[in-house]
Length: 238
Length: 306
Picture 1 (cartoon, one colour):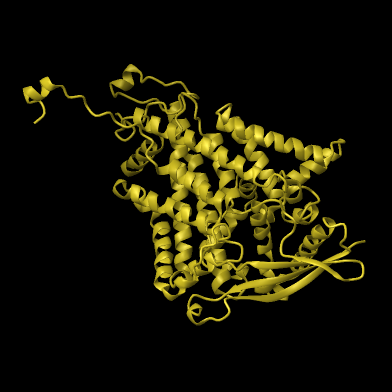
Picture 2 (spheres, chains in turn blue, green):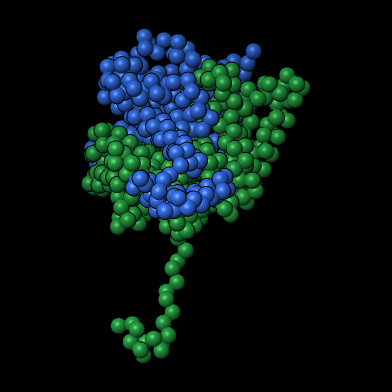
């Protein structure tokens, strides 16, 4: 008996002409008597469908994982790891994303990204202030950015400074060794500016959180911008 | 059983339909995608050319050994490649130089369709090794670039190619991405009251190129509330209304408009361009225009056309 579903027009036609030459249905198939049990095109299409399914599953898992992560990060003060552990859906998404083969695949294809796009909250930016000093400790100059040549480099730099948010959103117990790591990165940024300036004996990088007046407060506001000091790191010439 | 078979048949038809019009359209769409992605990748890479070594080399802004703590063991990265080749007497500068040459070469080759799938593979490996090496410097566009190149490895855009499965996956991928983006925005109360839009346009390093003054708009907060909700609606319902033929054009225009706005106000040109290209490749109608039937005077006289 012919399979009614599989006899849908177009189903038996080849879809990848470059890879598998089109198969013409045999006389028996054309007459609707039977279908061969292991048609290579069906198997080929099935394997492609399977691949697409796996890919979409990875996309959904990563999207859900980052959605849970950012939601918990925004609304809860408890550790995200604990909150994820309590939620079966979040746990499943996390376990898919953290599986070694998935991580490897995502590492080489970019599929490990989430799709928050400024959600649930627009993250605050940091203002960096580099103070360049000579050997006597006198200030030579101040600058907000390392000496880049391109605007695009600034965008990448700002993306990197986003990591310092952990300094103010996590307490020291939760930060643990990450605090030292962030201090090292901050010191390395200062070090980079010092190495680019022959006259500089030391460079101190002051980190400030940028705060802009809220929409609700803006009509009455006198001061629109404010800076909250976070901390400083210094790089000194060896 | 019948339902399973019908579902499977529908899926096969959705992903592998082989009629001439679908084939031509998907081929045109993926060719456009290939050229546009290749162009953006090259421009984006060129946009940091003087700072390239300082950003992605071993001893730049963030030294590689610091950044490497967050990189998986089996990940190919540019700094690891530099260190590896240094062991064979190839200097860091030479590696960086040939890396850039190869990047530009693969990009041009991709644009002109010269071994496009191999070019996409080479470009993907280079792109990924660059942005994962010093991963803190990566942002949204880098991920969409890598994913686009992955799709271009799969898509056969040659004369006999039929990249419909890739186009369909691209469509579903975009649907998932926007749905989650809209959903997470819906969960953030600052998106309901306009504060998120207000904050986004007033971040310290955005809106620099055109320097629009938005302060006066603070007296009309409903504008920001409306933009916030419009963003949520466009994103959350993107997979539904862009699939529906009647609303597709409108939704595509709304989505492209949203990204255009991000480009102009937030100056995220490459990210916006990449998202616009994804949307156009997935949903813009690339069908050749149907020629109107030729009607002869004789036909009209005979009353063929009522």
